[in-house]
Picture 1 (cartoon, rainbow, N blue to C red):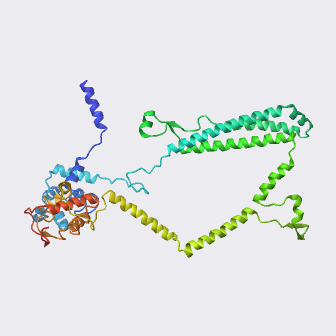
Picture 2: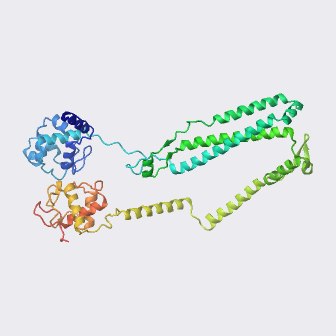
Picture 3: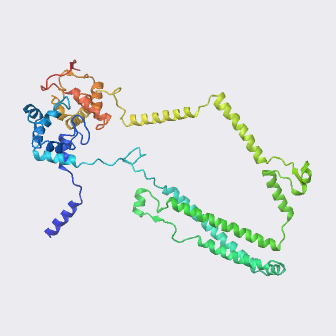
Length: 467
């Protein structure tokens, strides 16, 4: 039993992510001044171990990490002398064993940068996949299924009506009198084939529909049936095919009906006259003599028809549109495309500013304030110990200057300190805007200015009165 339990635990541990000790040591001891694959306050660390080994000074690398000043003063290391002027500030002594240094350098040499985020995404943490609107899709799905049922009922009713009509004695007598009765039998066969083909457009498993678990549906608000966009397109195609079948059957039924019962020409002419008058204002054929023009060429004469009303209405609309366009843009100085674009961008910027203000992330050098409440200073202290203590210790200074005396290189007001922490300086101070958000930068700057004097590094810069 114990053996099985140990095996199970080993299997579980094998599936857990492995955290690199070298990575943890790098972030704790080196990350403030060094980058892995680019120069920062200190030189990049990738390939450092190989360079020292190639120079035959691999053992001295541990001495360099332990106390760089001592190794430079000894003059025995060419590598130390070569890089002593890389930065104006000296590397602080590190409490690290040779094994820990090896772990850090092994991690650095094996480091591979993470893949870049997908292009076109504003937020790399969000997926760019657009999910269908399942709630709208299922409503459309119900409507299309209902329409399919109606069309199928119409096809069945019309097919039965046509077959009943074809089998009637009256139709059979008409076929005997018709000289083209052989072709009518072909029409009947065509009808049967069409109805059969129409029913084939209703497949059983063509839709890739999937149901949602009732528990998951209740928790996520998803409908019980997931209808994808492609399912909607398939149903639309099926409805179109069925509608064409219905139209064909209707025309077929009318052709059979009028084989027996003659059309009433008066009604047909009246219907055609109304449509023709509204759309094209065409003159009936029997009245075309009234609009014949005098000139003739090779027996061809021209009709003096009126312009189609739809074209005339469209022409009048373009005139009205052009008048409105001229008045709006050239008389009343309506906004141009460039102005509309600028207005849209200004409105978007207002929305961005409102969001940042609501999220309290719009702090910069122009509006940063000195915080004095204990909660903010406590957060600033924690951030200082993580990001600044490597160079400034407890504020008394080491690689960086003493932050607790009255001497400052750039000034001791909250805006200057905030900007220095945010953007870094040319003297070796790294930027922290990529590591800390504006609120955190404000907390650190306020904590630095709240520090009491601690004896330490010699004063640097200009003396300012303590605020």
